[in-house]
Image 1 (cartoon, one colour):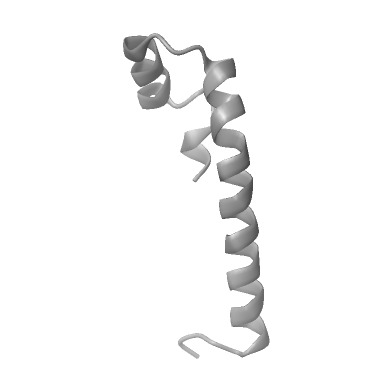
Image 2 (image 1 turned 90 degrees about the vertical axis):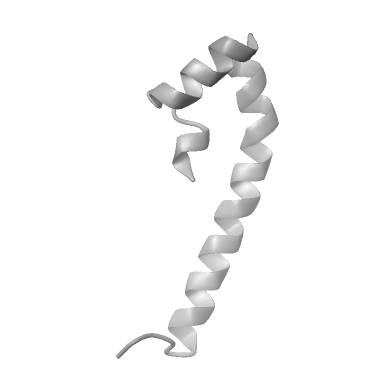
Length: 56
C-alpha cells in the first residue's frame, strides 16, 4: 500500500513523470484513499486478533 505514496518508488515517479502529474497533486488525490485503506486494514487485523483467527 505504501508504494502509492512514497516518493522513493521509482515506478510511481516514472509513471507520474510520463503522465506529467506533479507528486503534490497525486498525493492530495491518493492520501484520502490510502487512509481509508489503512483504517480498513487496521480494523480487519483487530477483528482477526479478537476472534483468534489464524493458522494456530
